[in-house]
Image (cartoon, rainbow, N blue to C red; front, side, top):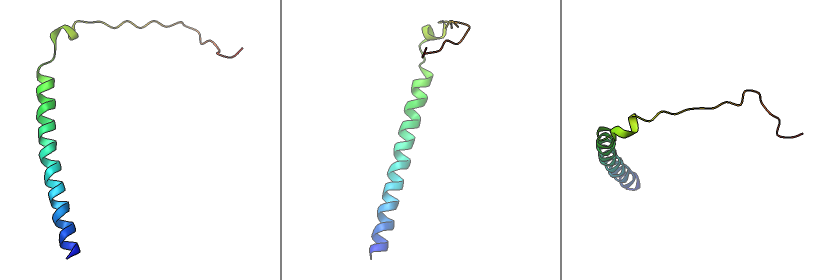
Length: 57
């Protein structure tokens, strides 16, 4: 009886996870589709000091 209850509960949890996964995947696809075009135009500049400096003297 306990084994049947465990597998029934595990099946229910697995089914709920699959449904939640589908909703999350659809939401992520919708977010990726609506990318703000102004974000693509920004450039990132990186500055380097050249030599490594010691933190402890």
